[in-house]
Amino acid sequence: MSSATTSLSSKERLDVLFSEMEELAGQRNAIDSRLVEIAAEIEGDGIWGATGCRSVPALVAWKLGISPHNAETIVTAARRLEEFPRCAAMMREGQLSLDQVAVIAERAGTGSDEHYAQLASVATVTQLRMAIKLEPRPKPDRKPEPERSVRKTVGETHTTYRITLPKVEAAKLDAALDSHRDALVAAWKRDHDGDTDIESDINAGGGYGEVYGGARHGENSDGPSVQVPPFPTTTDALMSVVEAGWDTDVARRPHGQHTTVIVHLDVENRNAALHLGSFLSEEDRRYLMCEADCEIWLERHGQVIGSGRATRQISRRLRRALEHRDRCCVVPGCGATRGLHAHHIRHWEDGGATELDNLVLLCPFHHRLHHSGGITITGPVGNLVVTDAGGKPLNPGSLARPPTQPRPSVKPCRGPLGERAEWWWYTPFEPQPPPEIPN
Ligand SMILES: [Zn+2]
Ligand SMILES: [Zn+2]
Image 1 (cartoon, rainbow, N blue to C red):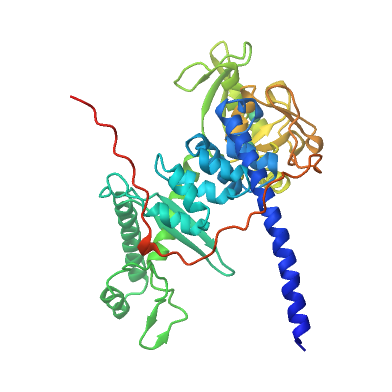
Image 2: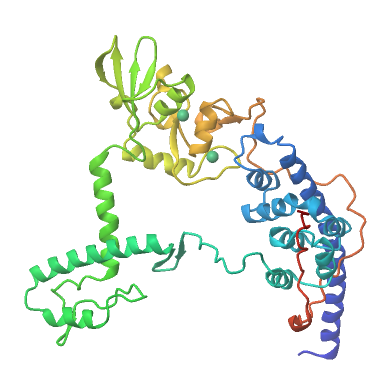
């Protein structure tokens, strides 16, 4: 089947394709270089403020229709463009890729432009990253504080969480888990007196150790029991912590999604003040009161005449319907999905109803921005118009369109050599000692 001719022709085909890739890579690097320059200009001059975007990477992602990660790469390169003129020039000439330059811009030491320009001409992105890691860092003994994080991996049947906490906070979590587990174990023992074997077995295992397991499910010498519920594990303790927190929260604010700001509103002059607090600006009043969860006391001449909850309250059903329809913040290019507010397109103060047709989801940032005049949002829901501070409508799509300019005329880029790096022979970049200050 595989004769000499077919293998030869596929090799030839590959050669043709590779040569096209080289040419495109060069052109692409040159184009990326220009995008980086544009991002640098947009950020440097602060001219993006009116766009309604939360950050320059968000703006770049939106306008180019690229992922937040890729936008971050462009902006990372842009932020140190002036520090790395040699690398920048090589990218402009098509000989370095955006990823290579961004890796350098991300962490390379000051004054290392020349060093990395040379290295980058032969090194892959991974090799560059390695080389930068080898740079001697000031204060090498100071361990960086680990970033607190909760990472989630969604599998087919389970979701795995990885929680990273500094020691003090980790101790707090441990204490909470221990205490909840003790309570669960006590309750379990109360219900199943006599099954002490199981408990001693678990305790002999040294608690949960490093793995928060949930495997030892109420097993005893007679095999797994069907009636007896599983012996409480640390996983149960964790869920108990979550549920306890949840219950307290619900008890504290039965109607709230995420806020219980209380506002006193004078129905005649529309003056509003925070409960036991200061008067609100027009802007803050409308922002706070747009939130269906804010508790409002209506007053006339200082006398409470009622609470404005009934008309504004968003039922669970309505909220779900809204989430189902909008999915994320409705401001074009935003896409935020967390902590969303239900915004009244026509404010309830002006007679706007708390109905699906008058509500849209906004992220807190854009909600605030809208009520402070940074963007406008006009209905109807099906044909929403969002404009920036200058009144220009924001379009959800990217700016991409068929090119009218010829492709950049640069040399093809063959890319790094792809050779195995001999780190033994590599001399890392040495930062220059700071100039001595004469006494
Ligand atoms: Zn609002
Ligand atoms: Zn938003």
